Length: 260
Image (cartoon, rainbow, N blue to C red; front, top):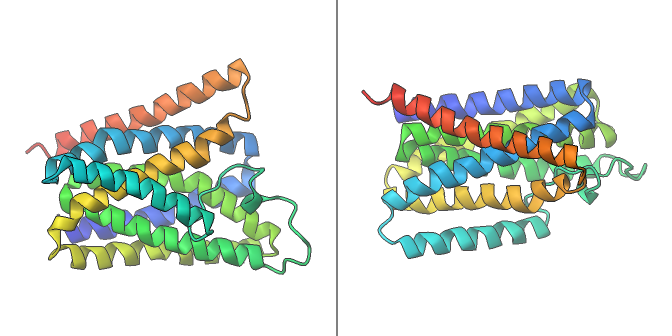
């Protein structure tokens, strides 16, 4: 199977699956259950960043120090982007971007802001998926799994915002699917650009790892601290462990499939 086919399959599947799962959850489950998905997403993203993406990036780079600096700069970059609301990765109910008590005069402005930010976010995800597949098919699959795990709880929050901002369920689903199509566009553009710019692959992998680390540590984990009870903490630790374990298992299964 060609690299381009893998990128098409991963970006298209990821976009449709994350939106469909998020829509189902947003319409049917309680916020408490959604928070459990966030714990799992933390583990999946950190597992992918530290166990798969960074090791592969270090193998490909000619300068470990430069790659480490790329990860550091990437974390700072995502902080700045979030500050300017260009890329919003907020998953907690009390977040100002996910406020459930919007101004009735909002007239959909908050929903539009979320859609614009989410489209940019999905476009970048497509680029990162393509870079991972160009480096290695196994890495591409693991990266896609981690991104989907992160997308589902985020899309649930986005659905809540759109509904609260006056969108109907059908329109919210349609706009989220359209926004998710940016993943496919980003993947295709990156594939054709990176074929002649292979030297950028380690840098993009470093930025992918930085993105996952930043979102996990800065946006997701603080929300988990709002439930400090022993039982809740134990549940979160287990789910984070399951997220990490799923990345390990996927990596093991995929490496076995491509061993020959």
